[in-house]
Image (tube, rainbow, N blue to C red):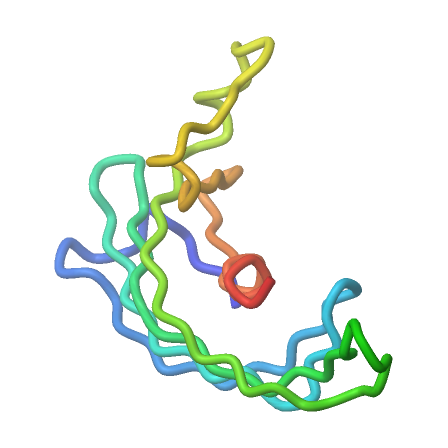
Length: 118
């Protein structure tokens, strides 16, 4: 689901989503449930919430497939991509690992969901 960042109200938006997400790196076998709150502070967007899904994985010892339930809390901050356009090389520090970027005043929850599940 996509949101226009400039249209997020000052009090933020709270959403409960159930999405079917396709991800090449992960075999998601159930709809993904997400409770998310989006807050806008100037140009940055703060996304907080909980994500849950069932994924099929493979045991590294016996190579048998099994189903794992993933449930995780997240707290991420997104900045406009133009902020790093002028940087030749940008290295994230440990404090910035939950940092992302968006383009054209659009925030895509599908990308957030994939990142958090991975």
